[in-house]
Length: 466
Image 1 (tube, rainbow, N blue to C red):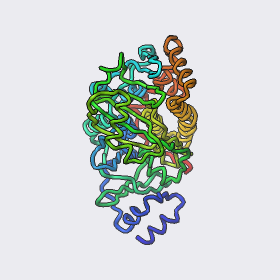
Image 2 (cartoon, helix red, strand yellow):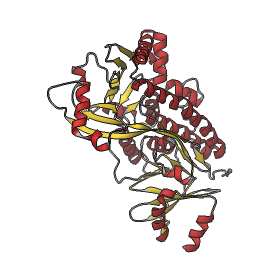
Image 3 (cartoon, rainbow, N blue to C red):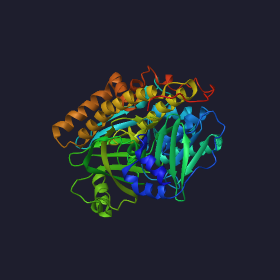
Image 4 (cartoon, rainbow, N blue to C red):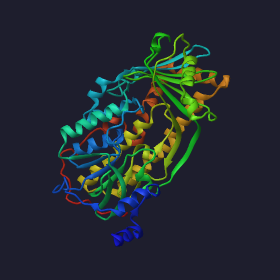
């Protein structure tokens, strides 16, 4: 074991996360177990996906649908049911339809056909009707649904429809990995043991604190805003007190902007906070009530179901892959949540990687060339449009300059009243324009096709440079 440890330490292909050194020390001190391979005898080694969130779930569904075995890791013992993303844009819904979970999700969620930009100072409301893109997508609406509901639907489908092709490991996390010419040895840590799995590829869908990214020693460039966001959920019926309120609203205010949106379960309000406030102050019941009462004053306290706070980042990994390990979603890019592009963008990353893995494993495509193409387009897209859009959106929302607010609202009103401009605006906000640009297609239906569904898997994955 001492000799093996020294070999791994000296190997240029051995990647280890510095943050996980304590866990690794424990793992190396014990036995690394090689257990029976569930996928023995199959044409290819499994793809190990670290992270069972929306991106990892869609990636797993796409691969098993194509007959490619998957080991899916979730570090928690149960699927988390906390408040995270809740907006699914039209192209994401189209992808969910291909992998077979959109009907269940639409049945559970809330369909949003219109959204509004409101100015509390003037009372002006710019409303955008998503029906204007009905000729561009099968789903001309936003679906409001807690992301864990989508993950749960995918989890059940994987276990129900593909038991021979998926191995879901709950309470398991990637500890370290070794890359070699024929694949990747992924070491999986649980509370009881560390197990080595021979994989064809490893995909990091493990969030902003990605172990995969740290194992690959890829910098995560960008910045963190000083202020944090407070998110509050309540059953109070805002639609009864605000005239003609839509289910998604961006509200400008001379003193305090906010976002109000309805999910399938409750109303959710996002407030900015001051960098000088402590966590305890921000989350105190008194402060939460004060913020809600400023939004709409009423005689009785609000019944608050949940109050949480989170930091706001704008970061992009300097590379989206290294060798046979590739990243998707928050593992390689994070940005502020205004516009709901984070989780959706992660699913689109996963779709792109899934298609490339199918081409690699079924057509013998060179994996370095495929991953390089993914990196060139998705990373540059994230560094360009998504980061720029979310930064500008936040700056416009939080400005208290009366002239800036007036100009912003006038721009929204002008676009909403012009059918051509309104459609262009909705196409952009619905991520359809972005998706077509990022995938280099005229229409998203081109990337939803699955021509290799019945093609056989090649016996060996071609070697490429690491």
